[in-house]
Image (cartoon, rainbow, N blue to C red; front, side):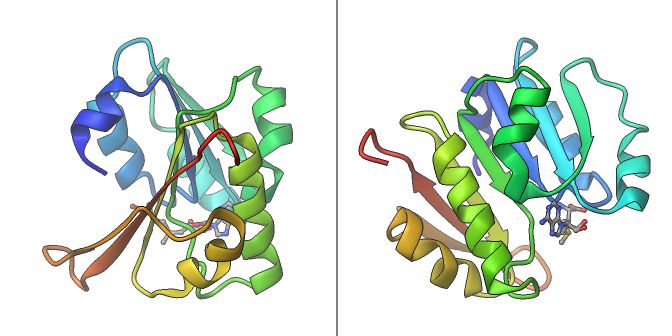
Length: 157
Ligand SMILES: C[S@@+](CC[C@H](N)C(=O)[O-])C[C@H]1O[C@@H](n2cnc3c(N)ncnc32)[C@H](O)[C@@H]1O
């Protein structure tokens, strides 16, 4: 995602932050009054993420598919942007489908879902739920090259 659209977002959720490299980059581009909630499944990565000391950042240990309950737990309103690093090609399709539904249901109208992936599988899972992505770009500077998919949630869902 380009830094300018992140700079205008107020509520951002990151799914699968891993070691937090992406998390730190997002925080560099987010506005001072923005919030970033990261949801990570691994207790090991969750602990590493605890080293990020930024008042805008909330570090949650849990499952991306429980997004609605996690947002409610932290009193966070519908996010403008959800960014996913979850490897959809490696998780069971049923879980990928639950994640995609949770994102669609929780995003604010006109909100954006971005998924970065090495493989195409994310689109096969999300297409029936979110429709075709608005864009898919190949980040050739990443090694190996990575695909970045982007969807917008319309008022119709
Ligand atoms: C490829 S890593 C993300 C890399 C990270 N963005 C970085 O730059 O270091 C994917 C992460 O998704 C997490 N993950 C996988 N399934 C998940 C789920 N259902 N909910 C939350 N996190 C999940 C994994 O534990 C892993 O840390």
